[in-house]
Image (cartoon, rainbow, N blue to C red):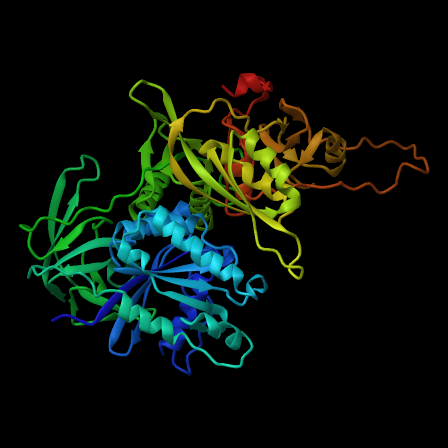
Length: 629
């Protein structure tokens, strides 16, 4: 038996309205009944996703369009979470390409679209946010459609893929149209619209799932979940056959250490499929559907589940190699265990291995030091999300500066990863931003003026730089400062090219506490002229802890606990109230951008601190050339 099914994913850059569109698809398809409450951004279910307004993990849902079941996978828009993208492309047969009507195709649009086109998927172009003021005359919308077509050609789309249908939508208002001339009447509310044209296109344009004629059941494991009641859940698309509860299956995987093929049998305890946002138990799961199987606790992403161990396993999911590495360490801070759980190396190792098993874009490596471990990944944001998740679980640990992974050519020359950085910013800041990126060995390859209307405000430009990945480390905060918070920033990996030479990461040294105690306002007032402070009065400090940024290149050991000496002599002008001029709030991302190779970030559930790897001041040099080699 085969079902009338369509499997699709949604491709979009960050903040182009992808999750909002899914909300309205669910509502208008009848997934939410009239008496059911539905929150906005239902697919961004994680706390971090809601706080940051981005999609981190791919998630499944389904809607019914007539008698056709449409499985929808919400994919991350950020290249750092590319592992999520790559593993779900094999589950779907088509995609909705969601593009902002004013901003046009941006880097993460390109990154995910390239994966979809390589799989041969059919694409539906959805021009979203046509209600933006920049698009009032329709000129910009036509420019964005042409830019999307050029992107298809650039990414090697075939003739059939280039003949894509176009939908014009305002997702937050819950309507779309395939007729460009209907946009103005819909915006003026002279007409009423729904998402019905998009529902119809998903059924007509996206092909039914490709299934094998083999009778044996086979499923490629694309995702994992966990249930308190039935244990580990295996998620993937059934490529052939069907499966029922209590059926005997085989897991065809690889040994975690040797990489040798392994096979083990297990019995299916429950079978689920997606109905709306819920996993609903069904008696049987058929070929072509995306479903969930319970019964095996050792299954990993990339394994093949089959009804016979004689069947050749499906090709494993291939993920692009990491470009950055970061050290995770057991906390050796004097304050260890006071604000959270001071975990041992065994528990830290188990937690990191658990993350690597669920995220195929991350890799784990042991290092020479027994209480430190190396995680390889795609970008600073991916590491920041992992650190924040562990922090919220109550762990205390330390992390080092992200380091770029080099490759070597046949002639022995060193190659480094380069990224394409795309910047959208007010034109008045373009010269300062260009200087910042050129200091980091970036090459300006494109300067484009964005459409401007008087009622929008400042004229904006789009700059594109080819820049070494290490040049991007720590540049985001400088960019936002230079553009006064009005600039947009995104990037994606291009390729590996010859090493571009020395890049200065940080021009300033650190202000370092030379003793243990509690910071005093009087002491901090005397240190203000030395640089920028990171801590407030009344904060616990210890020897080797970084409390601020020195205005000069070298480090400086200072006393933040110095109290004012009291005397019995007073004068009229001495008691004037003096307060600290300003303190820089160092978030986790800012710390990752700021630290050097001889420093740690100490992470606890309550605080994020920075410290030197060597705490005693008599064992470390303050000179930059001595400490950074």
